[in-house]
Image (tube, rainbow, N blue to C red; front, side):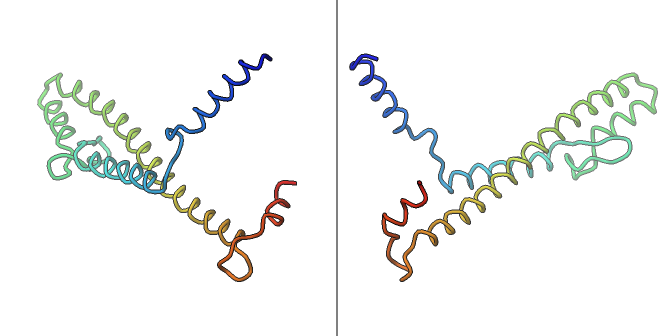
Length: 146
């Protein structure tokens, strides 16, 4: 490898290492988790998800308005009722998928925040001297790397 190629690669590595796009802070995790939770709650409130066995939780007071409309149209002999029911089944399936994803994101990030905070506290305790305020000497830290 030529010297100039080595210097170029070192410069590229330094540029990648200095990028903030891979850095995550506790506040960032909390904000994303909160947004996922908010989206989940709002989607539950307005999605109008319902089926024959269970009235939906959303739309117009939680009565599954679309499902009732489909049932009424079908019982009145309109073919549109069946088509609307089919559309609602597909919609409901997609909404449940998004609800599961937002719940998973929110729960995972909440867990990650707590786990990282616990890890940071544990590491801080390990790297504090016996007096509780001074840092552990470098000679002790070197034992972790050998």
